[in-house]
Image (cartoon, rainbow, N blue to C red; front, side, top):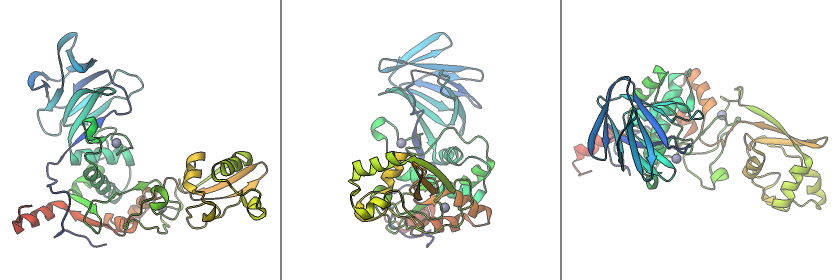
Length: 390
Ligand SMILES: [Zn+2]
Ligand SMILES: [Zn+2]
């Protein structure tokens, strides 16, 4: 992998410094009543474009859905109803606590500014957040705490690349990215790990691009089971920077192996009904429960039967498609490896590599062999010195 910090054409022409993202928060829930309380600095409250109030320590404001408008309350007092409500921080990096008054929704804390309006499913909360503070929250939400800094650097670069590539994915809903795993889990601001904060700062402005200078799809999964997979067998689209490769770093980790038993009847019914499995063929009849997968395959038994392993994984909720099986009594026994789709970065392998002393560059090169690491600010500086109007 060549590590680019110089002249290439990109298709995202902006400087990352100060880049803001618009994240839709609590998208799993239908919100009708929410309170906001300040944590470490006052927030200004705007109703449409008018400054309405300021929230100080020990104070909070409440918002309720009122038809297509947001009703603003302070204590028992109605302040007014507005099309849009904005909460704007007094000093950079301030945070606010969001409480939905619903026992099934945990209280959450986020930084920077907020915008509220009534969307299709209750009140929409949009967090206008600096990209690095967002990335730190995502890395902690997705990866947890207690890992080596080189692993966190990898996750930070992947998360930043994804955020920039898909920053307008939810534009129709009034924000850029959602806070669910659909985009990237962003369940809170960074709260516990100073190591994650350092990893984000030390990789500031770094993103992954492909050979044509586009931001890459930096897929990741929990454990590849000893071999990563090619995306065309999972999503029908191949990507030149993602090739299958053997991975010995993850094979002794906790998600490395699994086993499941499924009744023979359920197994054979699924294959016969959905794929016309040739049960009357004397050869295939005896093979229906037997499958050996030493290296990753895309189809069950033989490609000629047209039974994608990803379909079997979906149907039986398997941890991965990387399994072998055999009959035992009334069951078929599946012995599997890995957890997840297997494409791109293997998280447990990357954690192990970091622990063994590999750098974030080594890890990215191993799992994304056709991608390049780019410092987008250096690129911007280069373009300016060329004075070509970029
Ligand atoms: Zn999303
Ligand atoms: Zn692996």
